[in-house]
Structures are given as structure tokens and as C-alpha cells.
Length: 214
Image (tube, rainbow, N blue to C red; front, side, top):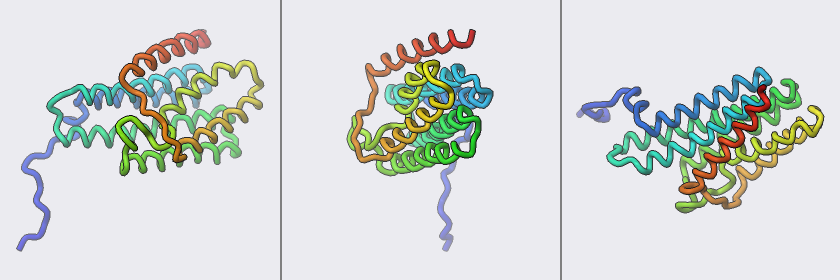
């Protein structure tokens, strides 16, 4: 008897899933996160933050698009969920960690903080992939994208401090947010009309930080 598992008669190619509109939006967010990493390494922090905050906007956008689209297969939905989670790891884990390392002059003392950011992201996303939301509108712990929303605002006050002082404040802020990310605290899942608020926030911060570039 042939005990091997049967395979589907037709298996779509990888790029077929990449052409799905919500996934295109997710990949646009990944590109923004990559820009954030690139400019953070170059120590162009205003440009890095612009990339990071746009990554948040696209992260929210892909879910909204996915919920409004009709006729998507289960395979498309599952692929999109996996893609979104992996991109979140880059956007809200690796990118902020690289930013912290860069701002800390890649000092070895900033490595533990960077590791905490990445490890927190991996743990939280793995947990969410298994258990999901507490209910339709509630997360357990602070969602990772909120870290960037808060961080992008706080960094506006960077000119008021010396680099050494602000690097410590930044370190502490990320560690506190990591604690909230993994806490049992229940936080709301923002969506719907909140997306327009995020869009306005993103455009406003983009204009402000763009002024720092010239």
C-alpha cells in the first residue's frame, strides 16, 4: 500500500501569490523597512524613520485590503498571513534593532538591547501566529507596530539632548516597550477609521523629518 501523502494536482507558483494585492502592499512595507535599515546604517536617521513609519502604514494597509477583497482562496489567505508575519519581523524587529545599534555607534553595550528587540519580536509573532487575537479587537500585549509609532514621535525631541544622553533614553524606551510587547496587558487592535489617522500621522512626520534632510 502506498502510504505517501497525496499531493494536490496543481500547486501555484510562488510568484502567483506575490501578485496578490494585499501581498504587494506587504512587500511595499518590506521595501520601506529595508530603506529604514539602509539609512540607519548610514546614520541618516530622519530618512530611516520615514522608511520605518511608512512600513507601519503598509502593514496596516495590507490587512484592510485583504479583508475587503472577495474571492481570495484559503491558500492566498494563509500565504498572506505568513508573509505578513515574516515582514513584521524585519520591519519591527530587525529594523529598530539596527537603528539602536547605529545610534549607539555599534557599541558592544548596545548589542543586548538589539537582541532583546529582535527576540521580543520573534517571541511575540510566534505567539500571535498560534493564538491570534484575544477577540476581534484586542491584542495580548502591545503590538509591535505601535513601537515604531511611539518611537517616531519621541525621536522628534532628539535635538534637545546630547547624543550620549538620548542614546540611553532610546535604549531604555525600547526595553520598556519590549516589556509591554510580551506582557499580558490587553491592548486594542486599531483599524478602520484609525487607518486614516495613521495616514495623516505618517504624512505629517514624513514632512517634518524631510525638513531635517535639507
